[in-house]
Image (cartoon, protein in one colour):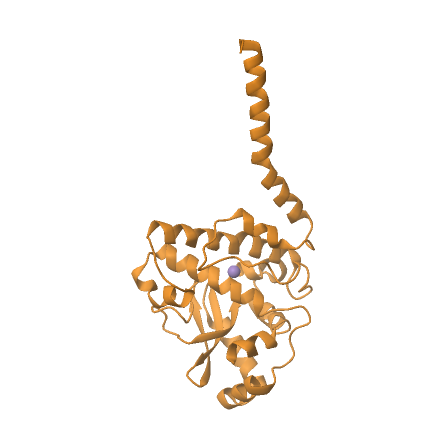
Length: 247
Ligand code: MN
């Protein structure tokens, strides 16, 4: 190959490499411009583990409007949640963590790094959060879950008051929870991305319902008014999903 045809060959090779490198970026840009696109292709862009995969959102970004706005959903799922999923995968690899399940991971999280704890919690908590909301949700639970709420808190109105208080009293970033602990239900909160499955958590139990009270969950639409966000969250709760977890 003479020098002229070699430079042409190199240029063509670089063009092909460049096109391949930018293809995923273009795909994700298109995806972000259209909030009603199914977001499943996001999951191809981040490292995932079998312990903490990022499942596709079960609805479109704008499906929870006006309670949760599309832009918040897009950033929350596509950026915040995706980053927790990638970072916990990195931490698991770096620390050779051999947990067999998410529950096993959290039961031993005191032995892992802060990176593993924060991002493992972030990955799992958000997966639950997306599933306990749905378009046309809200209302009141029924059946065995309703009975348990009544026997644990008195009535559904008292449950709502206590759950709202748990979210309001959590200073800074964290989560409010409804958990099952033995036969009883309990309401509480955790800081940062901790959850009630963690051995380090003061508040323990099997999470049935989790509400993100980090500002990134509501600031674009509600600014500092966390109480308004919580009122709207209660209007999109997927009580069927919460009931399934209770059973
Ligand atoms: Mn969040």
